Amino acid sequence: MSAAFGTVRKVTYAADRVLEFKERLDGFALLRAGALTEGTITHWRFDNGLLLRLRFHAPNLIVEHGSQRQQVAVSWYSPYPPIVRPHLHCPTCDRGCYALYEVGGIFTCRICGQLDYACRHINRHTPQLTRIARLRRKLGADPAPFSPLPPLSSLRPSRRTIVGQILALERGVVTSMANVADDLEARAKKSGMLRR
Ligand SMILES: [Zn+2]
Image (cartoon, rainbow, N blue to C red):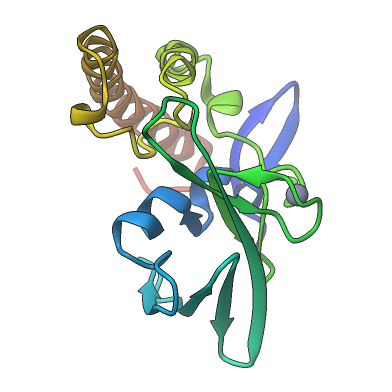
C-alpha cells in the first residue's frame, strides 16, 4: 500500500519519501554516544526496531545490519571554533551531511535518497516551519524541525536567544500538527474512509 502523506498541486506525495519518516543516522547523536571514538563498537537501535552494529575506524564508520555492510566516511569541520562537528559522507555522492537516512537498507543523503521535508507538503498548515528552518540555519544546525541543536553552553548569549525562539516555534508546530491530524481525520470520516 502506498500511504499518502499530503497532496500538493494534485500530486500525491508518498510517505516513504518523507524525510522525517525515515530512520536517521545523525552525526551529532553518534558523537555524543561515543560511537565516533576510534576502535569503538556501538549497537544502535532505532524506534522501529532496526538494530545496527557500528564500528569506527577513522576515517570510516562501518555500518552493519545482518549480512549488509556499508562504509560511511566521516570528516570533521569547525564552523565556530573550537566547536568541531562530524560530517557523514553519502556513499553515493560523497557529500558531507549532518545525517544520513535509511532508504532500501542503505544510509544515504537526502538528495540521493530522493527524500523531501514534510514541511514542503504541510507548509500551508504550519507556516512556522519556514521560520524555524531560517533560525536553525543561523545557528548552523540542521534546518529540519526537532533535529538536534548545538548545546547551549557552546553558544553566545545572542545565539541562545535564537534557540529559545526555535523551541517556542517547535512547540507551536506540535499544536498545529494535532490540528492537521484532526482535520485529516474529519476529512477521512467525511469521505467514508473512517467510521464516523
Ligand atoms: Zn548523496
